[in-house]
Image (tube, rainbow, N blue to C red; front, side, top):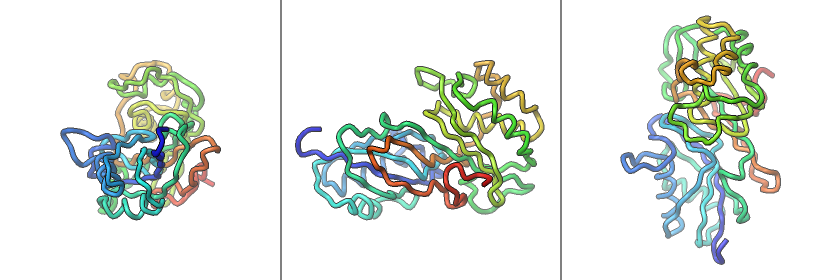
Length: 274
């Protein structure tokens, strides 16, 4: 770290319903990165460029996104929270701030990530949270979906569950947890892995929802996985129900532990069905 610079990490949440994803774009100003960098630059009184734990697509939300940036500005940590929040739109909020050692990196220091996907299965679409959950009018068989999900646990080649434009060098990922449970009127899918491919969670959800609707048997999930072919995988679920809820780092960094959320799911990680 050059002399005079500090590395600051922030925990960030956002509602992606009206945003064009996390990454800054020339063609769209309404991105999480653009809003954050503008707010941070205002508080720092200097240009700020940030790095995130994982980029999310348009319409996708986060409660546990982590970013870092380097700055010469000397500010109390509360300025990076309350001060920055005064400069942000309502859809984006900083939850916490920590000064970090130079070896911390929001993306490359991460050891695991967790997502939740929220499904509202009901005859009619709710007038509320339309952009924050995915609605289906079809009843879903949770027992069948859980049986199908078991095929995805462990270390596999997830080519069948990656977007065709995915740029990851390897399709191999390790899923450590994949749970489904009813939470109030919602069905919540929770998945943790060492890393994820582009659209991986949405593609997994799309396949499991097909099983839940009775269109395919649970063992079809294993067949899709073994095919190593995206065309075998069916429909990509919409972005609206997807939340990045947690990023795990080595204990040495001592980042704050916060509720994964969202507010509709007031449960700790691993707490579905318990």
